[in-house]
Amino acid sequence: MADHLVLPRETESSNPMPLKTLPIAGTRRREILKVEANQSAFVSDALAVEEPLEIKLAYGPSNNRTVKSIAVTMRTPGNDAELTIGFLLTEGVLREPDDIERITVAARAPEVERESDADDELVHARNSILIELAPDVEISLNTLERNFYTTSSCGICGKASLLALRSVCPPRRSNAFDIAASVLLSVPDRLRRAQGNFQQTGGLHAAGLFDREGNLLSLREDVGRHNAVDKLLGAEFLADRTPLVQRLLLLSGRASFELLQKAVMAGIPMIASVGAPSSLAVRVAEQFDVTLIGFLRENRFNIYHGADHVMGLEV
Image (tube, rainbow, N blue to C red; front, side, top):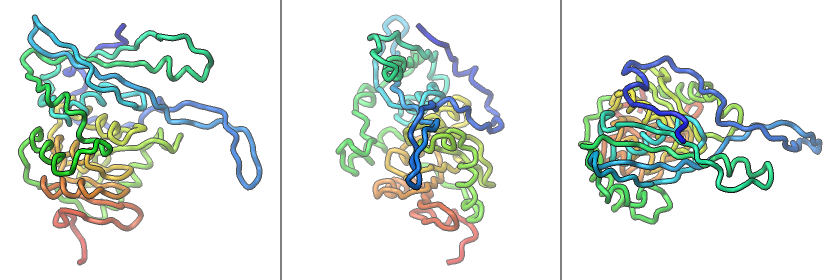
């Protein structure tokens, strides 16, 4: 049965909310043996929780609805509605918040008896979420069944991936977002200080949205890089703040094609990552005029596209 029901118009207002450190809901304590300098001791350690979420979609006219399971993703529990909405936004299924009629988050009953406490996560993690679209929303089955071409392991070539992205993305926008180099250098530390779950576990990725003054406006964490971004973008979509044409997206890891794709769909003009970008991510940045920063750490960074949008550089 449903745990709770969410209507998109009731999620939050269109005005930005003050940033709050996320609760430590995505962690679990476990006793471990810690070894250091030939000394060992049993201590309590925090682990990042990883559990499956089934995403289902209901669509079609009121008198002939279709319910389809479209994905199962491994994620850190919490912000599941935002995660799902962000996923559907960046996959080209959703265009406006009014496309959503209802969001139902449900927990399945355990299908098997657990044999030990070690099976708790497998038994109780069978969660699903159902997104019911408005009857007038048209769905492309090809979009739903294209087998997630955005994943790095899918085997689809770069050319095909870029063509697929062009087929679902909004029109290319003019990039009018600039930021000072000194501000850019300050944002990784601000993201780290706000990562409550990461500080507990060391095992979660983060995605944060900043304005041109370096203020952290929103943050999401997850065991999956793409999930953290989907949660972040889903929250902004439900608050009717997309496209995010005046925001910087900061990634705590590397910048891959699928993360650039998600940013393009949300209208983000600048992406910075603590790690490296992939070659296909750079091609996306060039084709869609997204400023792309990599290896942003301490007092250095690389600009792979859009150097004219970083102010105060001495060349």
